[in-house]
Amino acid sequence: MSDPDADEFRVLPLDPADTAAIERAAALLVESFREHHPRAWPDLETAREELRECLDPEKVILGAFAGDGALVGWIGGQPQYYGDAWELHPMVVDERFRRRGIGRMLVRELERRLRERGVLVLYLGTDDENGQTSLGGTEIFPGVLDRLRELRNVGGHPFEVYQRLGFEVIGVIPHANGFGRPDIYMARSLGAPDGG
Image 1 (cartoon, rainbow, N blue to C red):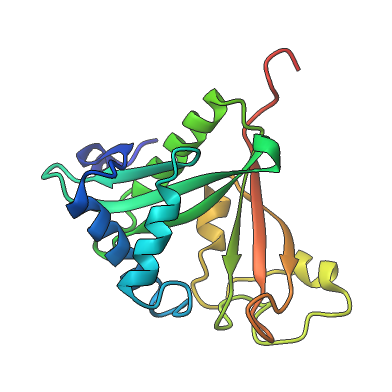
Image 2: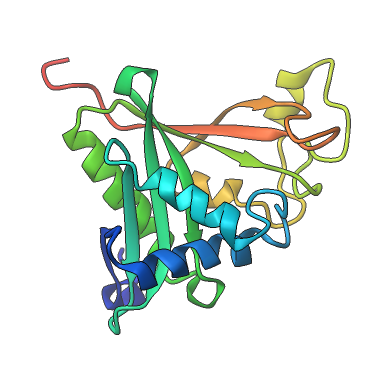
């Protein structure tokens, strides 16, 4: 069932010439990651650099626009593993517009475009930098896979959002961002190639 609010928004490629949208996209990174991942994009200049990288023609960058043309979210995809697997990086939705189907729209349109390119897998890393999961704030060696099987959301971590979109937890890099701050890896199959 579709979200009725989602009809108010459209997903389009982010135009490098649309300076207002590009600047808003950078601001969204800073604003949205400030609380839980402050080292990701601590200021507008680091966010602008991320946008410059995402705008590479070999990558995919899509924006979600409200009816008035305002950018309310965006998603990036970048090829890895010779193009058979792509990384979803990053995705952000303006806090005022969350829980309205925008993230789902962005992911689904990215998946559609990647399937057209023959991509087999879409994956992502979702950091736990401040103890939002049962893996955060602690040593998870030895027995990393056992702890991963028992993964719980204890503080509003977005891994469950991605699970609702069909992604599965496929691994973890313990201490990726410092002690007790792992990076949780998730992936989703985009289907077998034609004839396979």
